[in-house]
Length: 342
Image (cartoon, rainbow, N blue to C red; front, side, top):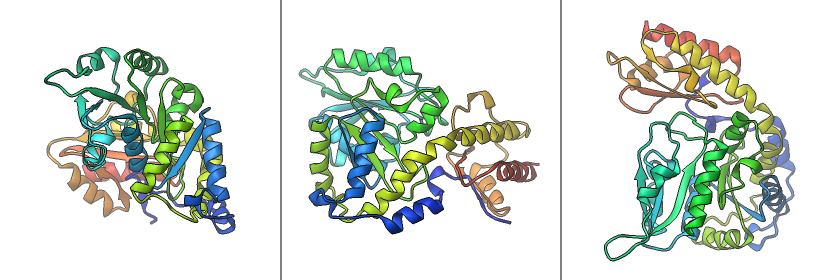
């Protein structure tokens, strides 16, 4: 039986079209700005998001760090959700490298609103660090793939800008958010100052993320990317797969979301699972197992049945659908879970 890998949408394999594009890519030295395939990818990303410029980076974590670093000054604070990827899963880079501190706000669903943000905003003074940036995440990974309503994003941005504060969007899965909202990525991200999105998650490219924003921001981010060791030379072989992902993969996200909803409904029917299928908004399914079992023990038992999932806490498990997992595989995963828990 083939392994059904639901740990993340980062596990996708390059499609045949991506592999062909990589083999045939026209390349040059990107540090000199001479890789034509990277230049096409950056130009196309900027066009799709209706921005002045874009930058190809090795990872989403680097893209987020560059945005935070460019938007802020050392000693400032970044207001973010308490379960945001930038705070939980990026190795403290905003503090270690950009010299800023996270100011976290706890939410039930990963969605910040201005009434939650406002008390955390500081203008400095004699005893407090100054707020330098508002950072938000959509879809929100650790909240189970929740999606920011367009009006909430617009309201946060409008109120932040009135205070002179920029807004950065960790949009690692922003195309999933666009699919869930039925809007274009340009439309839903228009209010914010910068966006990072991943080519290597739901879009299925083997490597890479993009940072998009103003020409001034991207020029500075390009310089600081080199400081981080992110100059990749003849990386057009990677950008070629990114171009295929950018143009073709969003068309398949509706299927991934439908499979996630089907997975959630099947899991929720198992008595030992605690899950509300109505809360599954994109391709991420987070659920709890009863306290007679640990999440890791359940994941280990699933692995013995060729189903891979991730433990995200003592009782919490995450499963993520993607284009390498079809409906038959989802049904097999539900059956395996039922067998393990019964």
